[in-house]
Image 1 (cartoon, rainbow, N blue to C red):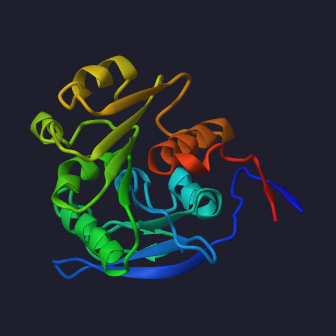
Image 2 (cartoon, rainbow, N blue to C red):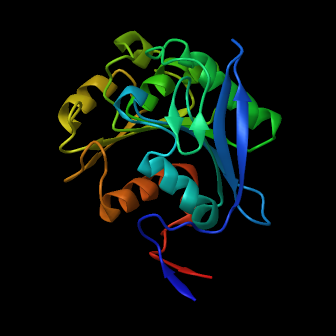
Length: 238
C-alpha cells in the first residue's frame, strides 16, 4: 500500500517513552525513535524552540523528524522537553532558565545516547535549541550540530567563534524571510567559523510551515548526517 508522506504521517519505527535525569536532579520527559530491525546509522538529539513561546519536543519539525527519519534515513531520534517544558508527552521538572540551567539538559541527553550506545550523535537545534547547541555542544562527544533558524540571541560571538578550528561539523539552515537572522547577516556572523556551512533557503520562514518547507528541512538534515539515504521519497511503500 502506498502512503503519501506529508503532515502528521507516522512511519514505522520502534518508539519508546524515555526519561532523562540531569546532574542537578531534574527528570526530563522524552521519546526515542529508532529504525525497526536494523541498527541506526546516526543519532539526532533534538533541541526544541523556545518553550516560553510554545516550543517543545512536539513542535512540528522535531515531531516530523522523529516520525519519518528512522524509516526514511536510518536515523535514531531522541527528542525531549527541556526543564519546565510541557507538551502532549508530558511536563519536565524544573523551570525555564533562559538557556543557563539547560546546559544540564543537553548533557543529560548526550549521556543517554552514550549510555545506550547510539551511534554518531548530532545535535539538531531549532531556534532556541540552536543557542543550546552552540553554547554547550563543544563540551560533548558529538559528531556535529545542525542549526535550524538560529537567532544568535543568547549564544555570544565568543561562544560561536569558539567553534573555529573544531573538527566537528556545523551546519546552519537560514530562511530567506526569517524573523531574526537572515542569510546575509548569517554569513557575516558565521564567518567567525570558517568551516561552518551556511545554507540559505529561498522563501523560507522561521517556523518552516508547510510540507514543502518541512521536506526541505528534513532533506538538508539527512544530507548532513546520512547523505546516502537521499533522496527522501514522498511516498511510503509499506
